[in-house]
Amino acid sequence: MPLNSPDGAGTLDADVIVVGAGPAGLMLAGELRLGGARVIVTERLEGPTGQSRGLGFTARAMEVFDQRGLLPRFGGLTTSPMGHFGGVQFDYTVLEGAHFGARGIPQSQTEAVLEEWAAELGADIRRGWEFVALAEGFLDADADGVEITVRTPDGVRQLRAAYLVGCDGGQSAVRRAAGFDFPGTAATRAMFLADVVGCDLRPRFLGERQPHGMVMAAPLGDGVDRIIVCPDGVPARDRDQALTFAEVADAWQHITGEDIHAGEAQWVSSFTDATRQASEYRRGRVLLVGDAAHIHLPAGGQGLSTGVQDAANLGWKLADEVRGGAPEGLLDSYHAERHPVGARLLMNTRAQGTVFLGGEESDPLRELFAELIEYDDVKRHLAGVVSGLDIRYDIADAPSGAHPLTGRRVGHRRLIGAAGETSTTELLHPARGVLLDLADDPDVRRVAVRHLGRVRVTTAVPKPVDGEDPLSGASAVLVRPDGYVAWAGDADDLGGLSRAVRRWFGEPAS
Image 1: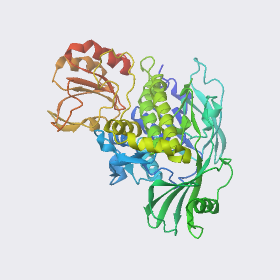
Image 2: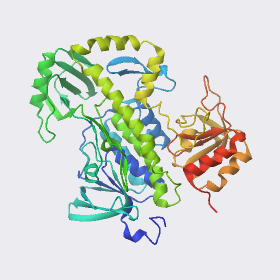
Image 3: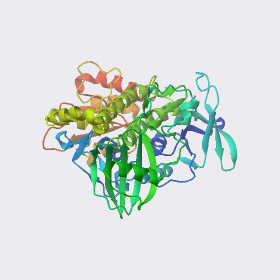
């Protein structure tokens, strides 16, 4: 029976418990609620810190927010065509639709937007509730749920749910408790981050290398500067060791010769170049999302953005699973699709670190890289890697010679139908599958008519655009709730469409 059915609901506090109320956890909570799952989010902190390591998100993460109607909540967003890879600047718009993402959006604002949205949808967000332990049995195929122990303001208690998802960051307690393997490379150096006032710093947006390290500085407004200090030869610190502004100012002065000790830090933090990825994103009834599944050197806002995309990939699948009726293997496709994306994230951030942070020994690499990036093909490739726009999932059961759209994001396209004008983005707001009937073909529509609870059928034609139309060559497109194309083709392949609908949305209703 579905685990949230009337006969089973009394034994579970929720269908899914999400540990961690950062961007990934809150995004996942909203996605699960859109899918009809009951969600509890536990967060050890009693309130938001207001600190913001991240200051924006990538173009693909921006699309994900837009697909849920969230972008207007951020206010006016600023994007920049100019970005960098390893500190080497270039124009991202050489790739159609690409840019360096939304800039100047504090992570605290992103979290506030997502928390408000998830709460509006009915997610139960419990702050001051700290995950302590995971009961045995979560790997048991016959178990009907998972039990955790949490420490609350009123004492210790237990919670039960069908599934548990760790969204609790790089030091994930859920990951450790569930025994996930987390291989990779250990930290080799310490780096510092701070928001400072009264230092009168000149901007160093892309970083500036000096003989003793690299520094960055960017004005945040109201006299506040964000600084990043990457001194050479400073070993990684114990994560419990307190960092002072005096240490950050000492490192800044050692590298630049500038004395900023008279300034004041609103907050300071440290990070490292440790690079690790969970070998599996699911163990029985426990899954990992975001930094709990992968840690890396910060570069280009990719960490937050990848976590948000992890959540968008998992949410609808896990909701289908707990509602009942999910096709076989749907939940396993989360690891199959997102683990390779995480591996490429680690690869590109390590490469950027080598170019960006290496000493004199990396000068030849930087010179060669600056030459290569003059080629448009190289720019397009790197822009796709960092923006997330180049992701293509290996869609299960897709035949060889499938339409080029298969496995790729659908992108934003205006559509004109009998009911007026809409867009691929607006159609995805409810987080349901979408079958675009672009040729007004009743045979195409008939394939999905018995899946109307999970697939929305829309007959429309793309509004004319200048340049290449990604929907050209297809008379019908099946889009998953996360915005990726499960099938594209025409009426000659109705069998392929039928298989794709069943593969991603289960058997039709009776």
